[in-house]
Length: 153
Image 1 (tube, rainbow, N blue to C red):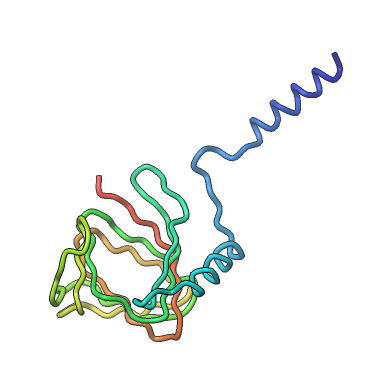
Image 2: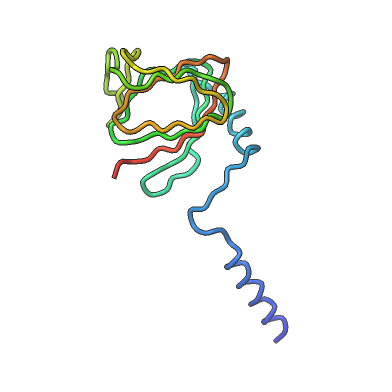
């Protein structure tokens, strides 16, 4: 009887002590480990990313760059990102030069005409609504950012 009660208590405690479904903490050491893996697999665009988690209408990823990105526009997703390392200029707004649809609801181009320039550094947080052109131009050798992509409702 004593063993059964003890097991029941441990089982009940384990159930109540578990994190709620969908709860995640990404600590700095974990993100640095992912960044290191991404640096080793940078592609021809000087870019690599890894999706971390997916939840309902949004998902998270870590993105790593060794070079500037193309101009882009997401028709149905907003971007929220936190700069983890490096620095960059973000061009936002204006019009994409030479726009091409590269995937469903995704447009890329060579540059942005008429956008506003924002300087980004470690710790900065950026929100870019859906349908807003944007482009990252690196001002450091490497640039890493945690991204939250949110699908329009």
